Length: 93
Image (cartoon, rainbow, N blue to C red; front, side, top):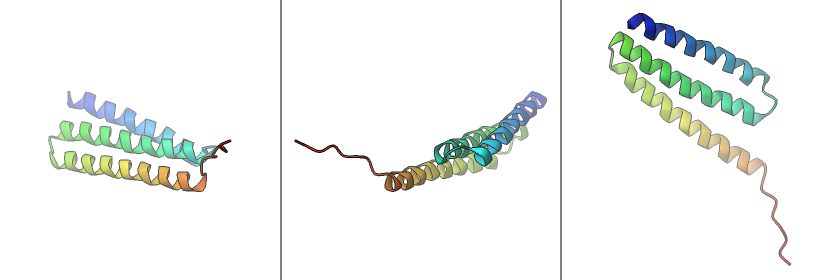
């Protein structure tokens, strides 16, 4: 079972490498932010799998912290983009 979990963790890390390419070559900021969200989600999944495989509960705490940081980064990105591009308002007649 442990070998299987390490194989799954390796596949997740491979998807992180693909996401890194999207961050590097993303055509716009939104694509780059979605790839960064992939880092957070995949990183949490990888850490949880490794915590189960190695039976170390401290890694679960690190995964929770990474999940919180990913959520805060998304909120910060949305606020920044929202200020940069205000919505067009329709004129009332």
